[in-house]
Length: 250
Ligand code: AKG
Image (cartoon, rainbow, N blue to C red; front, top):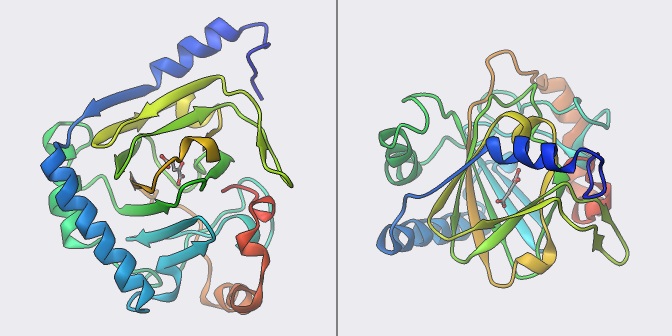
């Protein structure tokens, strides 16, 4: 865990910057088109048109998993880092064509990742004050780089914070990275593997969405259908999924 007081703060910051790339790849018009598609996803989710594990609701942040989804936080059978598992094949919806055409294609054409690299797309839809607690995207599930594209409003991604709850508090970040609407962020190396990132509640001033594009590793662990039955029961009744403290990863 690194803080601003770490003796090698300058070196940590250098390594962190080395693993971050940002580009404004999407114009206002392109953003508008994609944002209306995100609104359609939200409507479809509300009408129950997706598979159960595609949609993950919490009070100020809903997540939609396409292509692949995985268990984290309170859904884990065994809690803790490294215990995350993919859902069995077919348990989340496929990546919609509009994500392929409007979001992934321009990223491939900009040579950010090779064609066919991305096999999972997650949409986070944040309401003002929503957040995502500090975490590292599990390296046994996701290849690097991790790509995200921000929509709807400007926000910030913070590195190296600690969260505490009731009331929610976040320590000073090591780095606050602007996440501008239409901007692609690429995390690799130290930035992806060795330091946590989060979205602080105070940085979500207006509704904001992000599309996270990743490659799930071929050997990533997957829940068996029997394990899925074990976690699907508490999911229906549990209250703790809305409590960020219960979420060990995010
Ligand atoms: C995640 O969902 O894993 C994130 O880190 C989201 C970051 C963001 O909202 O930009």
